Length: 221
Image 1 (cartoon, rainbow, N blue to C red):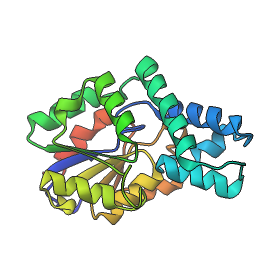
Image 2: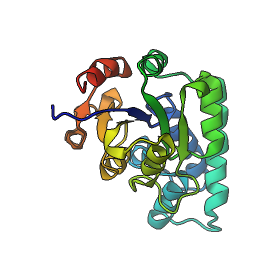
Image 3: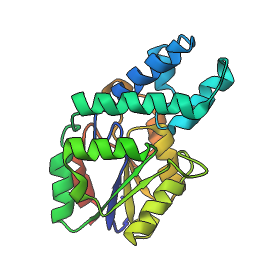
Image 4: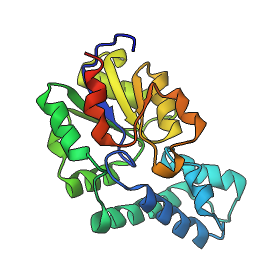
């Protein structure tokens, strides 16, 4: 492994800290199919990692529906996701222990997500992990969401750590592209059913679960 000093660990949220991807998928299927799109689970999975307004625009370009109002559709999906998180949200395996380990070992901890603030607040409250983060950035109000690197660059800046000294943890291909474009070291922890896909070679490392992360970080020392 080439020597790189890691001073900060920046986590994506959905699918990394919380098992919320099923909530997003369920919400998108419910809302989009109420508009008559007839989307399948596989189709919904294809937009994982994109900001919700980008997802709405993506499907409108491919299967347009009448009375298109991006914000109305996006907000309906977000409200459904928040409800599902509040009732069913659970941390991914190893998350709490890993956050505690990073804190104890002096790493700055960041959150860089495509999700809107409503969902960030719901997740942090549900998992009770707000106090671990030194910086939280969302792509919600940015001109471009992931795979554009801006949300990661903003997080590094807020942490006062150079991007090349940050390790980004992602579960989506779009997120990995964003972190790579920000010149960060990257770790992919994809969902088990996608773990054998060849696209994860774009990450510097691939892990099976969060519990393996401390050992990997130690290899950078």
